[in-house]
Image 1: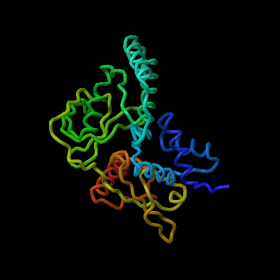
Image 2: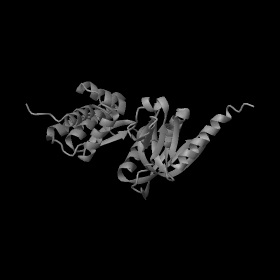
Image 3: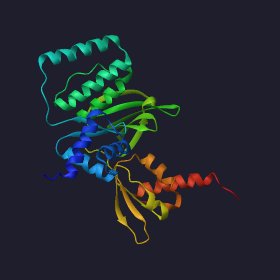
Image 4: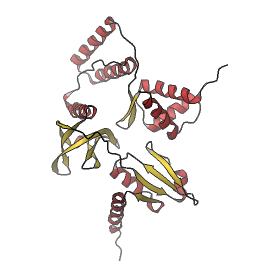
Length: 286
């Protein structure tokens, strides 16, 4: 019997899962562990995803979930099948029943991935035009003007779109504004306008290094874009985080109390200190 390359098999099993739907990192590791019968870690899954990307398979993290967008190879459909797509599209658009539209979009998304060609989806409803414009600018490399509510005030900024994301259960967009990542809740956005200014092409990627100590170092679970870059004699670990939103990262690290120390960059250390100082003011006991 011929030997099977286990890693290659896991990559194919992962692709089989992504053909069906999108997964968060934790969901995908659990699903892959179940179908393979072996424990899959975030580290291994990241390697499988990067392998696919190297081979031209377009896998992106959209709204907190890994999504298979396109394969470098595909299949051709007959004219009669293409006619059927058009009829389904027409009927779904006329009925405007949300469930049917979503089901059709899901079907076409799978067909797009497996065919390597693009077949038009149902027109996005007006209330989702903001997402449509954001994704258009992202895919074509244009900066965008975003008008949004910042507490009670209204602000407008020119920025570079980076990705769709989630803030808890709320949809948000991540942008590059004045050299920093900025998260804006979708519900706060009033208008998105695609500008005629090209993006720099350099996605913001601030590498943040922090140290975890004592029991936390042993039980800490690495995020998808994190890796251990050092282990001390006392068991402390040094972690490199590349893409997490600054405010989300600092708020998360703040919860780890004295068992966590931000090492670099300096601006993150300074902001973490400010967060700690503000917290301590709540306990200004004489």
